[in-house]
Length: 333
Ligand code: NAD
Ligand code: DAU
Image (cartoon, rainbow, N blue to C red; front, top):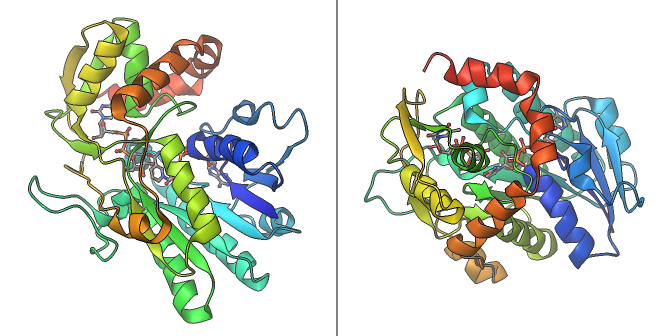
């Protein structure tokens, strides 16, 4: 079996490739990735160096690159995306191109070849919940809040239309907030590990009481593997970590692992900020027997330890355009 994984030089995709190499060593893996600011070929080592994973550098919105990448493949796992809400507020064009046009390009090409696709969507397509609302089920309204989540909702809707209109085999996963190794250090957890470890202020948007349902990336990818192998064509699977925490609780947790008290700096809120996400994972548990396994305390300790050992990687990111992004996002807050 040969699988194309798009966006696998990024956080979740690279962890998926490592998991598949360990658990399905007979599968051939090819990666299509544009290597944007969020994608690093080094995330796929040692598999690029030993030739066990092939990397094609290209754009999912480029039909020629997609045709070449699909050559000889049996299934596609589509993760490539512009993934950061804050960046989508600073500028949304790349989100529409990659997330909507890119997903459409891939759907068309896979349909022509009669290839099944697993689309990695997100809980953010549902919008947000009030404090006492029940967790999102797969039939909840799609009501995205940010340009990022709207572009992911567009991709998700396109995939569902290809199921209904063309009978294509697309399976969709909608997952909550991931954490773990190799996440680009502008998302909450890796950003704050660096800040707290260096005694720097932690920019908390608004009151810090927003709730996310945190899942370790390894658990998410176990679910993706279950959907690749046993998911039903045309189905949507919600999944979460069964771990709802406020952003302030997340910072406290990181501080405890590091033995440092976070220096909180309350800053202007994110426009359109979703208040709470929570996922009902009953369907994937009943159909595929999947449930998250790693608990928050162990997962966080492992993640903090990983980041503490990655100074050269972090230092190479902190220079250059990363500083421009920090200035654009935090400068005026
Ligand atoms: P990421 O930003 O770390 O990685 C995205 C990858 O896609 C990068 O390697 C980047 O180079 C690549 N990419 C971007 N534009 C591309 C293009 N036009 N063509 C080819 N490659 C391109 O993102 P992530 O956090 O690993 O998220 C992966 C997927 O999972 C995304 O679809 C995201 O919406 C979804 N998701 C993420 C989370 C989360 O908490 N991080 C939760 C649920 C779903
Ligand atoms: O829910 C799934 C989504 O989770 C994925 O689809 C996205 O790709 C992923 O980026 C993530 O989105 P969030 O917006 O929830 O993640 P982020 O790490 O950007 O922020 C998490 C929370 O922390 C959110 O409430 C905003 C807050 N925050 C974030 C940053 C970067 C702060 O308070 N301060 C910050 O500096």
